[in-house]
Image (spheres, helix red, strand yellow):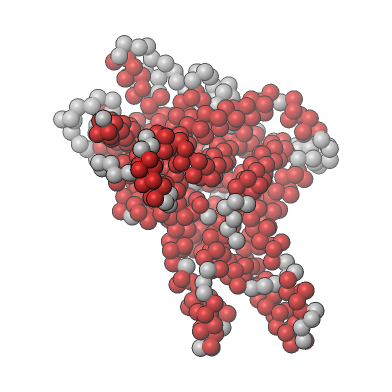
Length: 269
Length: 305
């Protein structure tokens, strides 16, 4: 009786898992087969890379890749430096206005840049930055979430370590660099993975502020490429879709455990 | 605050040291605060400010008081996208939570192929919404799409899934549940793994059935996680609009439009930025209310200081 219910559950779990993988599996099928097999599932269908070659030649995907890589790097580098400094101040200094400033930081957790598109567009255009990669990155550069995570990590650093570094004559910056930053390694990795996935995938804001091949990230490039009015073949669009998600998907498959743990750490706060 | 109170009773040199410390801290915070002020605090205030002005397409913008708000309350589309948003939340939040819990319970125990199952459930989380929308768009394409081909092979007629106001929301909700359930699963999984094993042993000694144990022990223990996930899912349902750009453009006839997408349309297709600001004020108010609820009901118990 017990055994039976177990095998039924195992079966159900597997069915759900296969159902969950179906959309992804289908996109790979369609991307790697000639378009006449897009909805004909024949195990003997010939494999081809033609769809990728077509997508690659019909739109500047190389440039889109470069833009996305630059965007993700810029955002992450900025976020790490800015959040480290701010978190250090909040975790280790007692100063006038600390609680007020921290509350002001937390406002961003509640009202994210994603919903302030109208006024942020005004600000970016006032700064004369429209249609550039920094325009996409700037609203996300000071991450309340990053500051929050690092502040918690820094608070748990034992005082003895700080005192020891001070005795050896380290300055405030020295202590930060030699004690806090190395001890925050797991938090940095968690935050980094979440940030990179978020900005690799982000769409609406980049769509609004970019208008040319030189600044468009992959997601926006894909949307422009796949728009119905372009009349591009379905299999070619799927190939482009697979190209857009491949790097993250590959990274995820390789570092599954880190990804899951990072998302969990990041979510729970 | 604390520093200034203390310094009143301390000797001069200590007060000086405190002062230097404050300046140091302020300098460390400067880059973050400048950016937050420019891209979060100022835009929030500017949104509110602009919502009280006319657009000024011909001539300067004028203060119009609550005129934009009156217009909003009379705007049928506004009410429709608001209603859509609540329907969308009602359709996606409980479903993805239930599925996430089911998945978590499955992959928490010793089951054949556990790591494969985890992988399968979690993978949609790391994919860009825009890529997901592209794939699902093809599922829903009338006649040629996968869903219709499947139904036709069973003898049913084709259907314009995304073009029919009565099916479009369900189609989008199914896709979003698919994308999000695995993400919520990991929070349940974390909570399940921290459930004390003694509880399970005690229950099995008592001869409690699995379902009884789940209902009386596991589920109540998971309550804070459920609350936490519900609130995140609710916030997401107001933030997720990427798919609309690709799949429906809010159509047919605004049947699938959501508040943030409507803001995007008003601001960047019709260039009515003051009305878009008015709509944004509504969205900010909703998000603030959700965050406040979260603070009152959740953060007090799971305090993080």
